[in-house]
Image 1 (cartoon, rainbow, N blue to C red):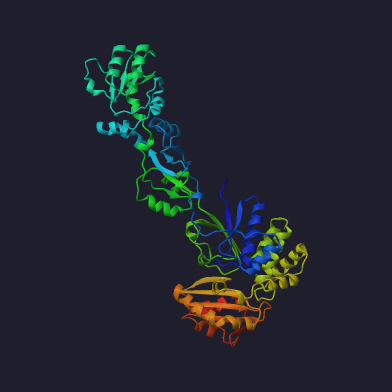
Image 2 (image 1 turned 180 degrees about the vertical axis):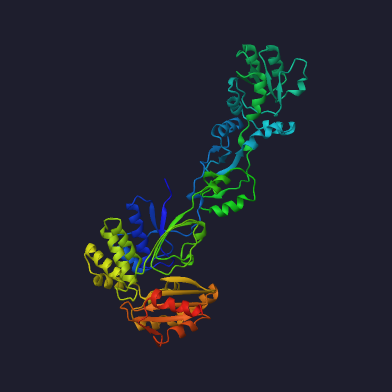
Length: 538
């Protein structure tokens, strides 16, 4: 299934940003496009009331445009138990054309990795290494590897790790004790090996052992196996009998499923392995990844609504792909690798544009979506009182009123009543209630906006919040922060501001100011930002 396109509003989202994301994602879905609404932060009390009123959940939280491993295609992780024989492991890898298999413990957690190089290491091993490896082999593993039949099973099988092929009667008996001996169906040789106290006899060729030899093997606790393999083939395969736990790599470089592709790529660049396990938070294997996956994954795709500047958008936007913008603000210079669709209009609310697009595509607007878009228009235009309000906002508001069955005035009062008082918000909540950053020339400024229902509310928070703003300016290196505490009835806003460029507010808005109240100034976009841009650009 193709990955979704995320429709996202700006950071520190207001009502229009969230409602636009949900409404436009729904429109795209009706046009058979796999779109999902997203958000970049928590939502304010006004937006929460609107979502609850019309039966919507908060959109999915998106923290970064970077992809994590769980968001890209990776290989299946082949997991095995550590008791698997080396031959079984090699067959497993070759059949699946996989570069490695992952060994898990009894709890299903990653214990090690087995690669082709681990399995073929016996080809270059010296005699001492082979003996040490074979000394750990089990009877069951030898039987599986050689496709053997047990003719006599010892009470307890142990071996020295030495393997002998076709000894003659002239051989020194001292060589064979506790060894594994590969023989033919020569009875005299078989009995000779038993007398030499070998641990195991492997008979190649005819499947027959006389009763005397079997009884002799039982008395001396010697295993006897028969294999259909030739003696030469048997002598080669038997070294693939040990369990993979003895040759696997324990110190495994692994990646968590929630790590970003960039972080994984950086770590891979310092290593030389061909495949790596991907694990969850409980260290259980969920897949396998190689460099190929990091060069060929599909980036996250985004449609930006109610904003178009990188500083206001999802973190690490440069690692994603913007494919469309729907907005009503100034264009802030996002760079894209490919041409994109941009719908930008001079209106008071992004949802007014989206409502028009529903009409353009002849898509019926459901009750809930109509409610969201209507509330967004009410919020962004202060119930059509903002100077940003256009005839389009009025027209779309009227149309949506008809679908919802409530007037804008009624819903506006409900929204004001259900919005938290600024007195009950923390400084952090006040700052990021509806907060946008802007780059103007070489200056970094920010303008936030919150509803303030009375002067008493403003007076109750201004001193402590002003100190908080001063700390924020120092910490985040802002040249100017302005927070507008706006009267929901549209009479104006209290201006609280600080920073080395605070003179811009004093000079630009002195004719509107009475004490700290800026009469008639209620629009950040149309009345405030253009003045700041003009003064800072001189």
